[in-house]
Length: 165
Image (cartoon, rainbow, N blue to C red):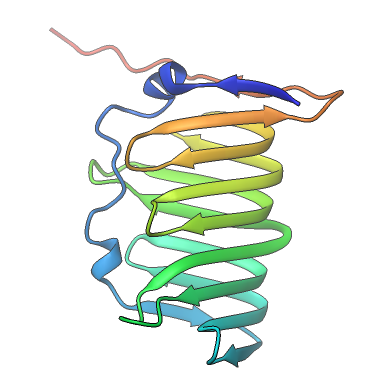
């Protein structure tokens, strides 16, 4: 597996103040789907069919979305989304949008970490990274993109607008 550690490049791709919207975790969660299955013992809810989930500025879409809740306080621990291309987006405190897609998305809310597998793409401000697997820690803005044997990680960086003096 080829690896590209992009902690320096992420600073170019994502602005230095691009933290996820800090109030998202305090917002209610809205989920629409064709059906849902609840397992109260494991605190797991599975939503099936054109699933759309929203919490504050966080949006997750997929054919199947699984939500794991903390049994002590009911907060969401982790969200998994699956689909031909499951989608993720989140607004940052500075008003920019981070968006991504993959066949499999794993968002660990307690660690503020997004892992995208198979046809993974992460973008902000028209700059994009494509790979077989992208792991992005939203708060620290550290990312690792990987490709499988025979493929490569692809990055497109758009120039930042020049500031007038």
